[in-house]
Image (cartoon, rainbow, N blue to C red; front, side):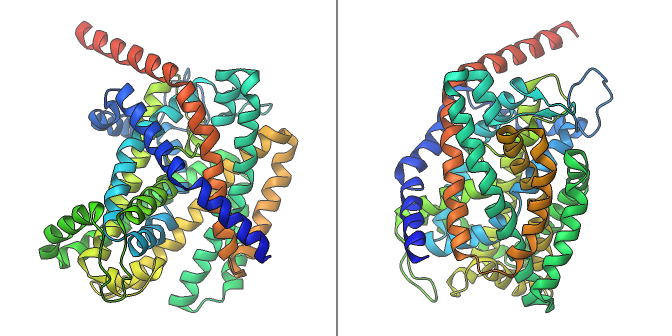
Length: 454
């Protein structure tokens, strides 16, 4: 087992090395420039479309779930341990400057997420049950042709296994740990309850997953943001100094202090970008699988909604976590992961640790639901429609195993598989970027013409 761990660790160091970080930021920057910073400039338009997309009354719109619920399904998979434990880990290893590089990743990641959703809707298919399916494997196959089909197969292969790691066992373990340390609930009990809840939702397919996500995700996000803002209010006098520290640490080494071991600039960049991608999944290729099911006939409209996922996940939720950790001084406490976030919240709010535990548990639960759909579509692409029901059963049964297991190796493997998923997707985004630019230009020309006509 040590040899396997060492091998995977070596692969992880390669796939999350400088080339990958440059590629993720490079593709995002290329798409941002090609779109003329449209994702940032049209942020307000995206929120308007999100609000109007809560229900779809136009029967001509093809798809299975509302644009709002498609985004909530996507957010259910992204808002999770990365926002609470991932941000904390990035700050512990990379220093406060890691938060700055997370922001940079998110700003260019909005263009990446926009492009992913545009291509997902443009090149989606309908399966034998009449459901709409899409994502990187489909826009590689249908957009790039059969000679590139192997790349789509590679994405689906890595995505299938990644779902059992980052989308299942790791999340179940996070829930069990949070409930055990704060409420003394035995891990096996948490595992069994999670298994029943996950199974009940999964058997209903994308429509039930979207319905649950559409209710739970907004509720818990508002709850967590409100609690985080309360922490910032307590330390409001420290906020200017915190921003100054974040910017300075992004470009300068941070000396050891308290329980903080010190960090080089490269560590801030590496872990800021890696944890940013881990959290918002821009470039990973997972979110477009959810957006492909949206009821819409216009790929660009769904792209404008999809890009909000990165903004909400990182610019809002991750920033709340990171700022709470820094303004409270918790980042020098020696704590790490979710325990560090809990430490920061508990020092500002009477029940802060319980708030973090509840948020982590529900976010991780919804992440299991979102990733189950992603992995299912990868399995469906590889093995056909008949593999869907057996997959749902296996995915459900694995949940309690994750809750009671030690997952150091699984974390490492999941992190590696995430990078392996990103590679085929980033190549496809570059090759299909002319399609994205063309559809976007055409959409906004029509919008201008409509405004003039009115």
